[in-house]
Image (cartoon, rainbow, N blue to C red; front, side, top):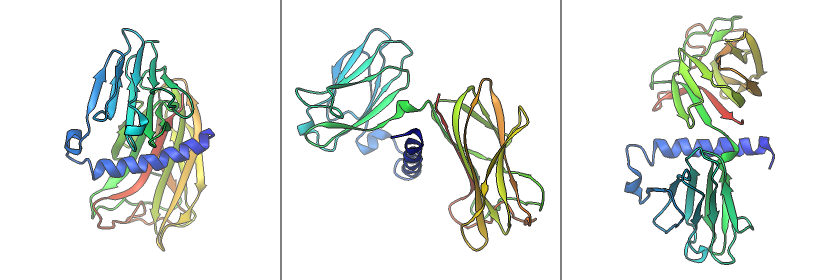
Amino acid sequence: MDVESRLRSLEKQIEILKHNSYSLFAGQQLSTWGMSVRHISASQDLSSSDMFVLVDASAGEVTVTLPPALGALNQVFFIKKIDASTNAVTVSCRGAETIDGVAAYTLAARYETVAVASDGTNWYIFNRFGLFRGIMIYEHRTPPQGQGGPMEPDVWTLRPLTHEVIDTHGNGTLSSNRITLVPGTYWFRAISLVHGGTGHQLRVLNVSDGTLITGTTSRAITDTQTESSVETVFTITTSKTFELQHYSRSGNRANGLGAATGMVHNTFARVVIVRLA
């Protein structure tokens, strides 16, 4: 699977993660749902009561052995290496069983994670979270009756960003509607709504350097709500600050940046950023 396909898959998984975190796990502890977080620092066998496993290999290489796949049908394990050493964490299985056709899988970098599931015969990897070095989601969100804000025609308008939904590795900071990123290579995708506007476009301004990333043309969501998006990959060698700007030929001065829906909350813009390197 190429990088673009992995990113598309990742975005779907992020949506599932967000939904689950807002509903199933809201205000609850993992133990409430029969789940636990286990810390280990030496080679050990996992049991059916384990699920989230944090491995510290700072004192030496660690082997984590999965239970027999035959007795673990539909069992899922999330295994993460949490130390910064060069010592490997090896995820192995029993006897002739395999993980994606091989006897073991190795986690080499700090915070690298693998998720495996059993089909009753062997183990299969359904995501290698170590392919990416961090996931960030930021949104422009208002209460049920909160409007998105005014938008003047023929002017590039700052798109508010009000909420950090997730930042797995601390790569970003949200302040005053702007996102500051640490050095790295990033996949960046943003979607922004406009209410009652036509001929509009979204762009990202690198405030630190004064450079622009231009987005796509608009497309209809409803009769009056349309969206524009921007998607790109870029590398920065020092920390940089970015903001979203939206333009419309016929702006709506009252609520051009989004009309309230009366739902639990309104989301008028979303930025998904994945650090690739």
